[in-house]
Amino acid sequence: MTTAEKLDLVAVGETMVMVTPEPGGRLNTGSSFILRPGGAESNVAALLAKLGHRSAWASAVGTDPLGDIIVESLTGHGVDVDLVRRDERRPTAVYFKDPAPIGTKVYYYRTGSAASAMNTSDVAAWTQRPARIVHISGITAAISADGMDVARHVVSDRPFGPALVSFDVNHRPNLWRNHAAELRALAQRSDIVFVGRDEAEALWGTSDVDSVRDLLDEPASLIVKDGATEAVAFTPAGVFREPSIRTDVVDAVGAGDAFAAGWLSGLLDDRDEVTRIRLGHYVASQVLASPSDFAELLPAREIVGMLASLFDEPNGEAADDPRSDDLCRRP
Image (cartoon, rainbow, N blue to C red):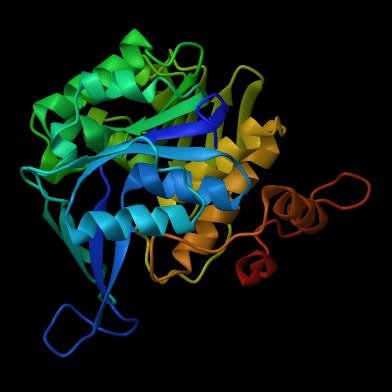
């Protein structure tokens, strides 16, 4: 990809090496482990690449083998990594997943990481690549004071020029203190915002999706995800609600990033509002059914055709069960 070629999306944020047991294992001495990239923003970039879009990940990693794992893995998924800085003084962060039937626990080791030292000088280098969308999350703002500066700079100063700013709240209570006001300020200054109904309630005391919109009234598009129930998109074209897809959940980690990737794919391809939400649900369902934060996907145009045949009758009326289990068996 040449430096002049316009990207569909630049995703800004830390990615760590995720250490996870092989399927069926736990975080103990009796298990074998798999090393994979794990990061909210790079998840979005990787899934968008699988859907057929030009995506890049902008960040910093160490010059250690863990940094190599991340860069090589994301390159293999089709993500442009030219904007990744290799830091000789700081390590690549790592985290461990302990899957269990009652819920997955995650243990982070990221203090002093290369990505925690990202700063506005890095942003200046990243903006040399024009993009239609720049995507960032509340995690970047939480990892360090420099990370907060980067997040504020991206959403408020708009160094990427005309690019739309997409912000996923991605509330991480273990990273934050006195964070509700900061996250709201970042969301209010963004063009597109993704937030879970439950995390909005925990952060700001909202009671339902409409009260979330009352609180976050400035973004042009606000997408509120209500877990296994539905997603509601408040957009310039109106308010749109679509039920979630019924899924046998293997691991819930990464589902929010997957939804964002699907929805943003629909935006990039100028799909209608309902199709954007359905794409979000579909991509999320594939990740929910996967033991990792990632899933192999068909190109977006093929998924859209499949969704149309499953959700809509020939006369345009909705099928009886739009949450068909058929969706969870593809590709």
